[in-house]
Structure formats: structure tokens, C-alpha cells
Image (tube, rainbow, N blue to C red; front, side, top):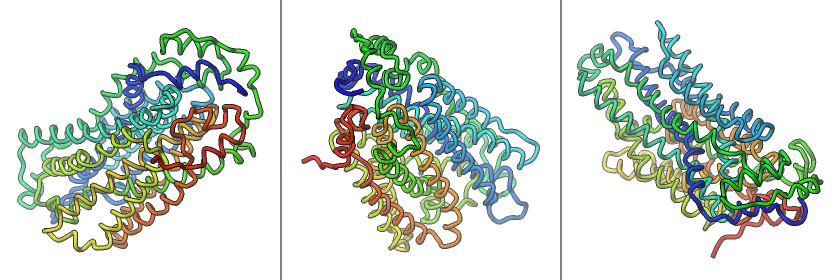
Length: 520
């Protein structure tokens, strides 16, 4: 595509922010709503499943899931997500973004409902059924990562593209809050209707039979907001960049975007025919390695390192809160009250730090740039993690617990006003259209591999070496993320074709994209 860019792509780049941008954010973001909702709920589910299905007569503490079962329930969705990111990322470049977009949503909805309907006559059969559906739920969620990011990046204008992609990802914040609110409402209602003594007062009566409905209702509810957007997903046209640059159909691209932008656009098929150029290299080629090899290393390594730390903190908040006394011992509560207490604590952290962090990124990403926000985020995550870990005994004292929660919240704030958002945004911008979804899927899958290590590793490290040393390790991981950020190019204010090298500027566009300028 040497010389002048296609007018349809130029029109998208300079388009004013319109209503279709906001509808696209909501439609694309519902997958992330479900993702975050599910992630939030699983920590509640594991506690309650332990009480319901693994209670031991005569034990001084409530039933808990065996470590291997807890690891399976937590980790199986991550394994599915990793597989889905690679598969649907590749499929999105082969078949088109729109054609596979509905599949991922329906898979999420069906498996979310089926997870809540996991029945069986024995604890192992319930857990096995739950794990089966959670794997396929993760598979659908995984597909949403590359597809939603790519679709939003290809629809957006270059001035506010970062904010739009980050806003899709920020729907996770609403998913976390929705999970907290639903869990609080459901547990409050059941606890009021079916009051029970604490475990230490009466172990058998502390878990009422109706508690089995609590986790099922909470899990199933997350499917419905996503289901509401299915119709609109199917009505979205294929992105002009895929249609023009990959499918090589400029006429269809112009027709689709004329309806979206409500302007007349020329098809310019001749430019497409002339532009079948030297830039058509494949993923496993020297051309890709030379132009984008370091970029792919940067996006995969930073996402991998971030998710080790981020998911360790997220999944095991309840354990850390208990360790510092912010949650009372499990034996002093009944089963449903424990769900309420954990949900309330996690919702407070989300409301005060996690959600604001997402929206700080949305507001400032096109002002500060991706590189600066990511570097800053990793830096402060490192600082606050070490500030928590090194004087850990200090924070466990009752007089210092509020300070601990503030410090812990700040690590979440700078994760979301930092690499948790930027690692999602950048891979959707810096790779060529024909490989964009695939490369985003590879980057996201690398992140999910980090999440698996974080989810399994924290659980065992906490028992083997203690919370303090585990948090120090997470601080070192954050510091490594800061250094690998220097491999990631800045894409602020450039068209997708400029930053990926498809604009016909050859190597200069790639070289230029590696220079990180901090706005004055």
C-alpha cells in the first residue's frame, strides 16, 4: 500500500468521536465484564465449595478445598483462556474479526450458566463438572481478548484510539464491581432468610443446605449482561482494515464504513491491487523477525511478568486480608456470612483502587502515551510491593492494618493505571493488520501463562516460604517488567499503518516507532 493511504482508512483515522464509538466500546467490553466477574467470583466459590463439599466431622476449622482441587478450580479457566487466545487470535486473522466474534460470546454465556448448574452426587463429580465448563468458559473469554482489542483499534480514530481500547478493557472494572454487588446482595438475602450459627458454635449447622444455591446464583448471573449484547455483535460490520488490507476488498470496506461514518467513500480498489507488496511477510519469516521481533518479545514478556504479580494479588486477596486480621477467622462465621465478608472486602479494594486505575488510563493514555504509563505503573508497583513486603511484620500489627490496605490498594491502582491496561492496548496497534489478531493472541496467551504461574505459584510459595518472601518475589517480577517495557514502541497519535509499517514508509516507520518521547 505504497504512497497515499486508502481514503476509507484515512476517514476512520480522522473521524470525530461519534455514537458508534461508544456502542462499540460497550459491545466489545462485555466479554471483559464476564471475564472479570468470573475471576472475582471464583475466590468466593472456592471458600463456599470447601465448606459445602469438604467438611470433616470433628474438625476445628471449616472445610477447605484440597490444594490440588483449589488449584484446578482456579487454574483451569486460565488454561482455557490461554488456548482460546491463541486459537481465536489466529482465526480472527484467517476468517475475519466479525465472523468469529459471536462464537466467543455465546461460548462464554453457555459455559457461565453451565458452571452454575454443575451437579453431581459426589463432591468430586461436582468439581469435575465445574472445571470442565470453566475450561470452555475460559476458552471463550480468551477469544475475546484479541478480537475485541483488534476490532476497537481498527474502528477508532488515531487521536483517541488508546482511550477507546483501554475503555473496552476497563469494562473489567464494572465486572468486578458487579460481582461484588451480586455476591453481597445474594449472601445478605440468604443469610437473612436462613440464619445459621458460626462454625465454632455449631459446625454442622453453620452451613445451611441452601448455601449450595448461593454460589450457583452468583456464578450464573454474570452471563446475562453479555448475552444482551449478542444481537449488536452480529450487526457490527467487519472492520475496514481487515476487509481492505487482508481480504483485499476495498469496495466492501468503503460500503461498510460509509454506513458507519455516514459519509460517501470511494472504494479505490486499484490501490489495493497495486499494494500487494514486499510487506506481505508471514509470522514465521525473517521480515517479521526483523521488523517486529523485538516488539513481540516486548509485548509478550511485559504481559507475562505483569500477570504473575497481578493475578497472584487478585486471586488471593482473601488470604492476605485474613493474615493481617482484616477478615475474622473462618470459624467465627457461618458459610454465607463468610461469602458476604470476603465480597465486601474485595469490593472495597476494587472501588477505591482497581476501578479508578482503569479510568485514569482511559483519560490519560492519549496524553501521556502508552510507554510512559506502563513504565510508571511497573515502577510504582515495584515500590509499593517492596514497601509492603520488607516491613511485613509491621503491617500485621493491629494499629497499622489500615496503612497496609492503603499500600495494597495502591499496587492495584498502579497496575490498572499502568501495565494491566497498556499491555492490552499496545499489541492491538503495532502489528500489521493481517497478523494483528494473531500477535495480540500470542501476547495475551503469554500473559495468561504468567497468570497460571501466579495462581499456582502463590498458593504453594505462600505455604513454603511465607507471605513476606512471596511478596518480595512479586516485587522483583514487577521490576523486571519495567526493564522489558523498553522493548515496546510508542504508538500514540500515529495511524495503525504508520506504526506497523504498512504505510509504505519501509523501515523508517518502525525505527521511528521505537523512540519513546515523554510529553512536556
